[in-house]
Length: 556
Image 1: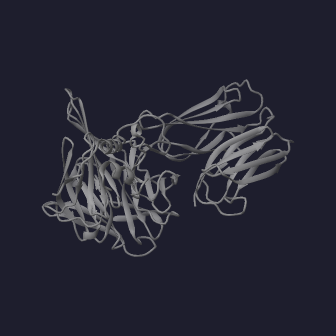
Image 2: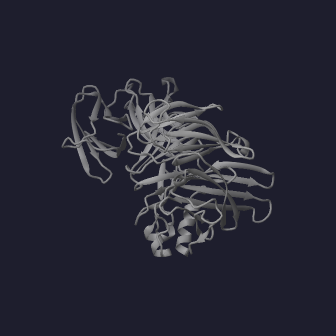
Image 3: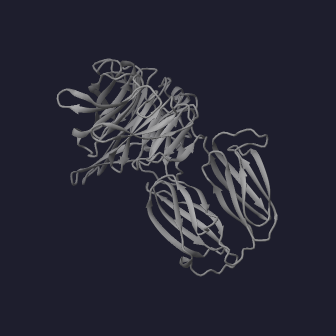
């Protein structure tokens, strides 16, 4: 094994430490994914080339590609009671090495495998880690997946090559399944995305002879059972253990593919197209939700386990390569139990530059697209971007709660909720309007609840003012409706303004109304008729003496 210490300084130690501590349970508010400072006390948002050169006198990375966290927490009934050790491993295909950093000391080392480590690495890319702490490296230039045993001693993580998967061609992505039984290596499975063979292979351990290929699916093509450049692979999750789902980023076909491991073979499940040029990173969290990283669009998108898009972020990263959600092993020495659980934060690896490199992201939940159904104003729909505990309420214009429903733990995706008229309590208001409130509490510890609201006109008392009912659909592809309700017999103008993320007004739409429901439609173009790209936009709607503001997301 070759291990070079890279002379960390206090700032470098603090920066890398902050990245590692970011993997610990956090507090405060978080949207679906929220970029945060890796070293807030030093004003460092991203660990980048500028920080490395200033504090270490070297660049540290050529082209960082993927990361994994090897994390362990030990609980004792005597001092020190709780002991935590976290190590981050980052692959660098340009400099043919892994970079390892440790919490506490900030020690940074490089590992190339050149001396007693299974041979020199050549363009290492995708990484994975199993519940025993073994790290799997896509050594793509050597057409193999190298298996490294990790051993921890204080602030050091020793890497030792203990096996390899050969017979693969240009492996770019690797994922490990625990077979549904954590901490039992006998049924573990390793999935490899082979870009050189346009296939995904499953490998299993064979006693005394390493790994054997037990199933494969693929071959060049665009139809069912075919791939054109599989670049990344991820295993589905169901809480603390792996599921039978395997997800693949199929580059040239621009799609995400779900495979099903039935125990004998890999079966084709479903597929969904995306508009990204290339997806280089896939990751899953404890709910089996998928994070897809598209570098050319600067995009991280989140999908449900059923391949339903939940959220898109194109604002916080420059040419991201991969995203990693750490799963950490906790050993309770008081009762001998061992558990493995996902953290509420992740690491984003992006292009190495003066202001880009490695980011810490906090995970959370948003309630998007809360919309009241026009024909049934006591029914609403919304998109939940992460599993959360949800409560829905109806309030009158005075703020009095008319009805309340605890929906319990709700999985991410498009959801509906309805109230019956006889569920509504007495109201002091007489204008016939209700306020929908959907409150979501993240399953991650100590997050502030997220609240979405919209108004609905139920018309029983005869409304006297305009009401904004929301945007539909949101997110949208080609066009979106900004929906309002007016008193019968009323007339006037509705003005809707659309702004981009910089605050620049890009479109104004004016409609004449004659009372009742009105849809103001935006077709995704600016005032000059130019098609606008995907991303987050803000709207401001004006009618009479009332104004409403909000956001909407366009997907293309």
